[in-house]
Image 1 (cartoon, rainbow, N blue to C red):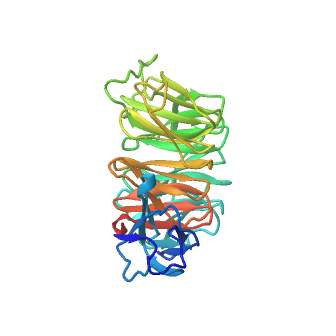
Image 2: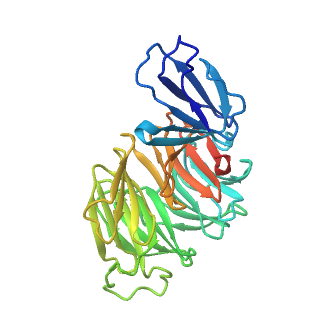
Image 3: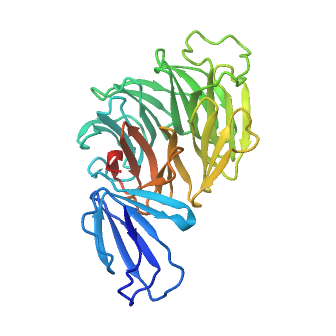
Length: 393
């Protein structure tokens, strides 16, 4: 750990230090320290790094590193900055709207505003397959648990299932009247859920390529969906009709809907009965479950709500780092990863007293985050996929 403070010998510079963290693509972060004339209110900044070798507290001296820990004890604030381990620039030519990593970590899938959806090698970004069949933009894509099949939804109101091995489209679901904005896979993937701009969430039978029912009809665009196992203490209600034998794994599950009309809706996946309806500060863009009773949801005005399903009347906490839209939320270890429209992407873990900032996107929105073991992948408006190594911390 390095404790940076002005030298008592060099009287030309002040006791106030400013640390500027500049973002660079090729796995580097730079720190420039400079001092300004003033001798009041000493602030000490602690910086640790696994790569800093020879540091000198002189003005305008550069330090190259992959990760930097900056702490301000006076403000009880601390952050780690992690630069990308590698960047993939040849997968797409325009903004990348969504990505996912297979369960084995070997493959990635991504969709772009260039009208393409591609499968690539997760280790080096080498292109493997191009998935063609959607008309207009592909909004969302994800691997099934097997890692051999991909689910996608597009502005053409179609939900498609693809073989990752030969890029063939094996199933196309039709029924929505508006673009599909998000999807969720139930258990091993016999059933899937879709949320659409037409205001409906639907349950689909993959084996028979059929809709098993409309789960919710909100009258407002459904921007995000999430499925999670419910804690035993949560009353999910009783189905009004006997569930279809084609429904597999829907029992004891909750469905969460992030809606454009500022509402976050939770219902029993099998029962279709309401669990709660929460009204936020702005349109909800995304949502995820942290446990059987805790969840997160992000809004267009930058709020991240943490709610307890057992008492959803008031949030457990509201995290607000900026007014930029919260674009994605992902449960990660004992915390979560969030990305926003101002290019920020960060990791919050309950057992750590600092936030880890994933750098590199500058001011371009980070649309989606995916993980595999200690690797984190992000996709961005600048058309790049960035891979981060948590071991670099």
